Image 1 (cartoon, one colour):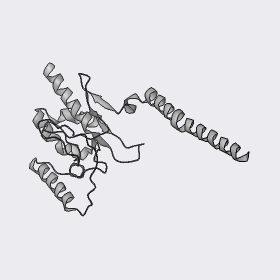
Image 2 (cartoon, one colour; image 1 turned 60 degrees about the horizontal axis):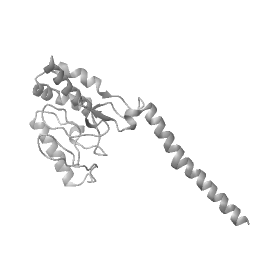
Image 3 (tube, rainbow, N blue to C red; image 1 turned 135 degrees about the vertical axis):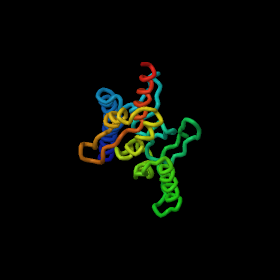
Image 4 (cartoon, rainbow, N blue to C red; image 1 turned 90 degrees about the vertical axis):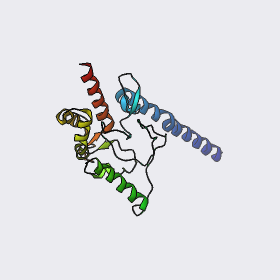
Length: 199
């Protein structure tokens, strides 16, 4: 009799725990996310003027061409060509600091920036821990400012307000460093070009 009672009690507790953790909690998080943070809850997807998704503000992307600010390097290989297309694989490198392949990759990246007369600051030559960081430092953006302004045929002073606008502050005002979201900045520059052509 005791065994049956304890078994029923264990089943009842399991069902209650399952209800709380598998149904009620996820549903509450879904409702709160959609009600109060819909942009973030749906992946922070940026859409263009044609309402087509162009990327997430949470994931670093490769930009090609002198017209664009470039983000942190990624170990993910993208397709070659005029426009970079992701291969669908995300991830970071698992190379140890002592691995010569990592050193060669960093030197190659630094040389590419030096050829463009850009001082290769840390976040332009080193990948982040996840390999997906969507931000660069203000210092890294300023190193690229003259190249982007020259390629777009606009004065640097027109880009500076956008650098300030798309700088995300420290997390909870104390953790990390301020960073510029590269996708949002580059899209704002493209919109600025479109507006200039229309006016």
